[in-house]
Amino acid sequence: MIYTINQKTVDSLYVHVPFCARKCDYCAFYSEPPTRDEMDRYVRALIIELEMVASDMQPKTVFFGGGTPSILSFSQWTQILKAFERLNLLGAEEWTVECNPATVSEEKARLLADYGVNRISMGVQSLDESILAKLGRIHNRSMVFKSYDLLRRIGFSNINLDLMFAIPGQSLEQWNRSLDEILVLQPEHIACYELIYEEDTVIFEQLQQGVIEETDEDLAAIMYEDMIRKLDHSGYRQYEIANFAGVRRNQHQGIPEMACGHNINYWRGGSYYGVGPSASGNIGGVRTRNSANTERYCLSLEKGERPLEWTEELSLRARAGETAAFGLRMSVGWSLDLFYQLTGFRLETEWKTEVEELIGLGWAELEGGVFRLTMLGIRFADAAAERFIMLDAE
Image (cartoon, rainbow, N blue to C red; front, side, top):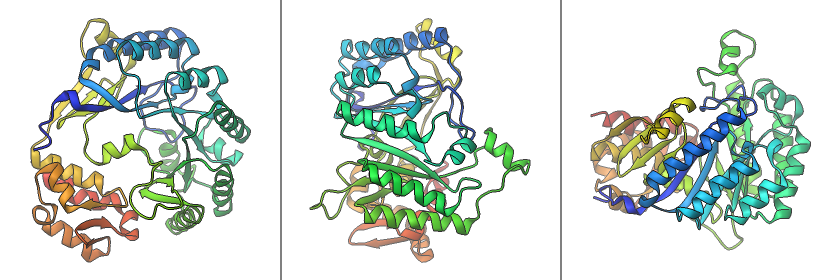
């Protein structure tokens, strides 16, 4: 079984930075407003955790997410990057740092580039000022263009821009205008997310109280269809539900060159370390989650202890089912032979009933030894995935 891998082969690292200048109204990720002392303490604790796991890693992909990683100061970033150098964690083929347009500076951007960061993911969400205000974002549209130009000038040649649609009060015209303006910038990668109303968020409470109304499903579907059409026409291929990457002129099939390799590792059931408060990891089928509290996270590491909140080891079959579910998010779906190679299970026989059900619904197709979701199925990908995950609750 490929799942019984040696930890030395773990080549993906996720780092969670739990600080934001202001928590967005829709965000359910763990984050908090920063103080300088707390951020300094976090950096020291993060370096201790990196020291604990560094010997088990040879990272090919690194992803700093949050929160807002770009909110860290130049000095704090310098400490982290020097620790990466000391621990032989530099040299990743793909190293992503998430940024807010309001917290990008030339000094920090040059520092990141000097140490090998080669991919920036910037949370734009919208280029309409009224929509940005509704979402609780701290940036405005001019900051997006200014930060994007700065990153290009420094030499970043792999930039992702995030957009959101089906936002309460967002018109089809507003959505298409933001899409058109983003396409003019020609980023290498675009991620487009439909707004989800997560519990324990401001926007969920507003929905419950009747302050806002959820976007009409028909309008959301039209927004989605417009997005697919515009991005395809502009040379972007949808390789995952919400992710689009630029395609070379001579590339006719497969995963686009500029796809996010770090996320593909998730969707293919690969192992990865997660460090930082609330970060999740998956090492050879053992899933972990760090404490979702910065104070407890720091205290554990200051005592020389891993800050793990829980660990869970799934059965081989449960891991395979989870891998099937996540992999179906990708437009290429699953080669039946590749799935067997990775998991030791035959997708088409072990989950025969589920596969046939999805095909019968028009949500999936099985052709040429490949099982994938149809365009209709992609709209219901979460419901499709449940067929595999729920079955494996052993």
